[in-house]
Image (cartoon, rainbow, N blue to C red; front, side):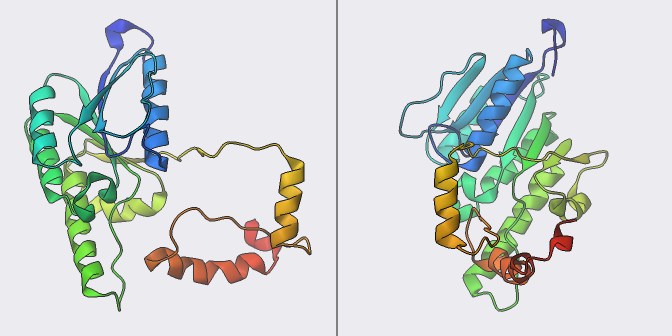
Length: 245
């Protein structure tokens, strides 16, 4: 990002997941931290404790927080992150990563207050909020309402909002602070490439013995995702090639 020390940016990355904890957000955040450090920026990461061997990447300082962004962690962040000192606060946001059953409103309020005190806040929205669907049980409606309120607070704190998919843009845009903008940052795959034609052939033979189309899906299949898959899979499995144009 910057090639000289004079123009280097001080990044403070706050994330709910970071290696050795496994996960897509964890891998993504580490990739970003390594890339920023390699470009000459100063990089610090704040994340919860995780069992295992922590990475020791050049130029990346990692700070471990107690719990999952409860009062103790927020108090420590308040002590260790001076407000308004020119550093950029980069938040890797997905509601379930911050504990409290994906309803950590205190963390979102804390972030809003940091922005009000002069922090330059950038937020990468890996996910925005849990969708509300008719017929959902009461606990899902509560989760949808809470995560929507959280997304409003976080978006309203953002000088820049990054999104993992353009689908989040129309949802977040009305909640942004004046002058803020949304940038789509496609997420690179964290799945290693396996060049084993024999294993690939065996997998295809097991799942599609007639040379049919094999579709892989990472993640859960409930809620809004399950309904979306139910609508799109019949078209994908029909073999119509014009669907991929």
